[in-house]
Amino acid sequence: MFVVMLFGGFLVPWGIWFWFHFAPNVVLSTADLGRFVSASKGNGATNVETTKGTVAIDGTLSALRGSELVVQTSTKTGTELCVAGNQQSCVALSSPWSGPMQVVPGAEHATNFFAHGISSSILTLWRMLGFLVTLGTLMAASLEIVNNHPELKRG
Image (cartoon, rainbow, N blue to C red; front, top):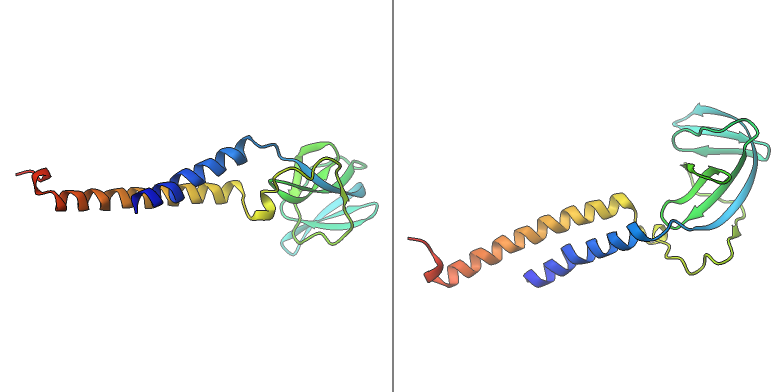
């Protein structure tokens, strides 16, 4: 049982975390949203007005008026609104994107972690729970060994 817990609760989460950590965040598809006009807070989301329409995002966007905006889907963070060419500016959309997206050539071989429900926070939680379960199993195995071998008991 300990070997199963060590593998499933400790080695697998850490292996996937290393893979996730060292893999690049690849843009899979994009959509042109035109130029930034304004943003306003409303109903728990921020409405970003562009020359092609309005998009609702979670959080805030910092962009110069007239900046080119895109919606992009990436392997680690999913679908986001970004200032074109600036990955640091990306903000999650408040609802799924329903517009057309253009596939980025050469991106089809990238591992899409986000599509599989793998994110940095999920991996951190999985690693913490895996460590705790593996530690508990190790303690239970230790008690079982001591109980089955009286010569190991002190006293």
